[in-house]
Length: 365
Image (cartoon, rainbow, N blue to C red):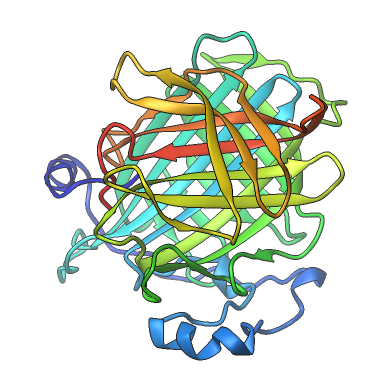
């Protein structure tokens, strides 16, 4: 989802510059986060530490990690049985900082998308800013990010507050955790390739209770506020060495199952389309249906049969055209869409989001 070197130069030329955030936000901690630090499993501790992994600590690691090259805070969810939402902020470190008020090497970018059953395609908005004090800034001690029209913050009660006014979309989301953050991989060490150094720090907050107010083209958009189908998923990842040079992209999904469980899984594909890495042993992803984008020409597997920790399950897209053209911000096209999960008997057992990258061209992170 991040951009190529040529697109970086174009973005830098046309975007504001500035310094990173000065004052850090005050530390806040919920009951679920009273453990000061969480250590990874002993069998993996040495390898993880050698790779550069650092033990995840809350609430500090809800905040930004500007020494790492790439980072994202990623909300996906269903607001009722017919409405899907995505809201993401990316942070990227590019080059060296300059000693000036406008010389920060930190960049913030935002993606927001809305889709509804019966629509022909999703609606997507995006933005990009260099980190500028009082304009586009972030905290390193807790989740607190803002840029024009955008705000992501963790409130005193632990809720994730997201406010976006961008283009056609107006989103006000309040997401309440039901438990402690889920550390992905080996206690937050999420390997992304055959080398130990190809990894991210990664945790999720799943089965979030979500309250939403939506506006489209300045008009309120109604949702079913009594729907028991509503649930959100919030990811936070950061890394300086994420993918192998042979990697082209990934297939990822995060599912909130109706029985209260959650499942995240992914596979990394090489440039020939073969599997390079997978998030769990025994994970199988089989394409059942492809959709071809008339805009990019990419063929996306928008229906998958998946088997691993759970399953077998069949994932089906709410709408086929959920391709995001992010060339004006992070520089890539990718498919990120609301999906429903069914068992082999055809029963609906969950909902979530599916992300498909590197299908029009290899990803460059």
